[in-house]
Amino acid sequence: MGFLEKIGLKKKETLEKGVEKSREGILNKLGKAFVGKDRVDDQTLDELEEILITSDVGVTTTLEIIQRIEKRVAKDKFVTQAELQTMLREEIVALLKDNDADKPAEFDADFQTKPHVVLVVGVNGVGKTTTIGKLANLYKQAGKKVLLGAADTFRAAAVDQLIIWSERADVPIVQQGQNADPASVAFDTVSSAKARGSDIALIDTAGRLHNKKALMEELTKIKRVMGKVVDGAPHEVILVLDASTGQNAMQQAKAFTEAVDITGLALTKLDGTAKGGIVIGISNELNVPVKYIGLGERMEDLQIFERESFVNALFGE
View 1 (tube, rainbow, N blue to C red):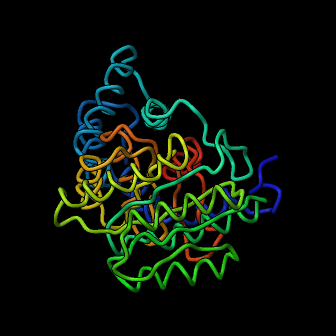
View 2: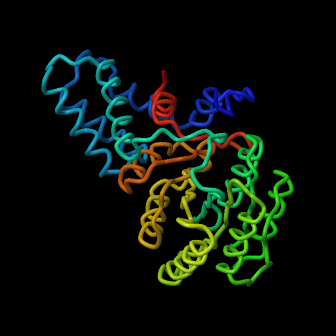
């Protein structure tokens, strides 16, 4: 049994409540599109296409989903609404699975390399530092030795905020204050994690996107110095995005993937938006798996992303 189950978190209920606004919007649109219809026709598929696009799934991903469904509908001209909704769920789950064949591990799973180094990136205001703090808490509660690194030295508030989270989660932190060299902080963090016997090091980075060249150079330098301390570091690069910004999050994601190799996504603030469909579009278009979703303010409201559970919650059981 995984850590989240052991401590009795009601993941399903939290997930369903977290995507409630998105689910209500989608089901309301589906209900209006299907009212009075017994069978699926071309008009129904056109309306489904519009529903997905207006639910922030995105044009590219929506067209891919519709094309998959059209192939299945063509084999049976007497598809019902219920069958269509089942197809829709199945195709979205299959599309998300294409991005990541491996099921994400729980927080108490063993790492192949110690310390396991995670670099966290994202623009300011998306919940990046908060996500790091929640991850630190969840790993700590799962019995891991955690170390934080405050390499977002561009803003004093970022360092101060991460210090607060280190205190909340009761995990140590490496920081050199504002205007310190981010690569130096990253190097010290990984070195300290290695010396302490830490299981995982979570390292915050600056959230500037106005100059992608400078961002890329900074992140490249950070990765290079970490790799000198621990082979293969960073082992993960997590991009944090604010789901409530919809297609703006997509643009941020594309910019960051141009600057650094992203291995996973964390979508925050899903509980406060009706734009939950963006999770599907971003994962598909970037071919990067969603690893975490933020569903509320509490420490435990950050969940590991499970595709089938998410799709069922988004479209209703």
